Length: 140
Figure 1 (tube, one colour):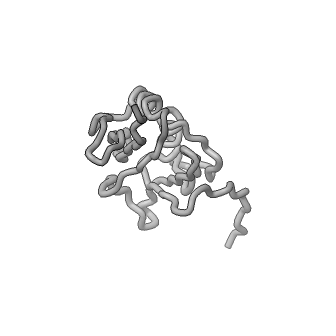
Figure 2 (tube, rainbow, N blue to C red):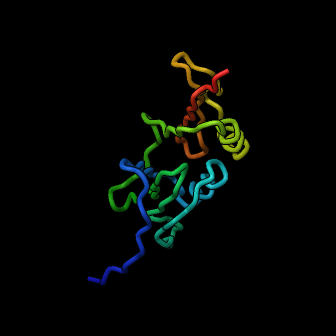
Figure 3 (cartoon, one colour):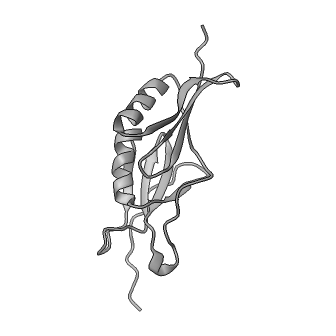
C-alpha cells in the first residue's frame, strides 16, 4: 500500500456544499470561471485520462466541488437532473446573467419578475447543470 500524499485543504465556505460529478471537471471549472466568476482553490492532479477526483471552487461566497466519473470504480457518469444550482444575488444580477449567457449558458427561463416578487431566471450550462439566479426587486 502506498503512502497517501498530504494536500493543503482550502477553507470550505458555507454549511451545505454542492458536489457535482460532471463529464470533464477541469473543463467545467474553466467554464464556471468564465460564466460565474469562479475561483479554483484546489484540485487533485489529473490522472492519465485527464480526470480529477476533486476540484474545489469558490462561487459567490460559497464552495462548489466537482469531480469526474470513475466508472471503473463504480462511479459512472449520470446526466444532471432533479436539482438546480441557485445563486442568490443583489443589484448585480443583470451582470451575472449576461456573463453566464455570454460564456455559453442556455436560457431555460428568461430573467423576469416572478409571482413571489423577486427577479429570477434559469440557465443550463454545457455540462447539463441547471443554474438559477434570484435577486430582490429594487424598490421604485
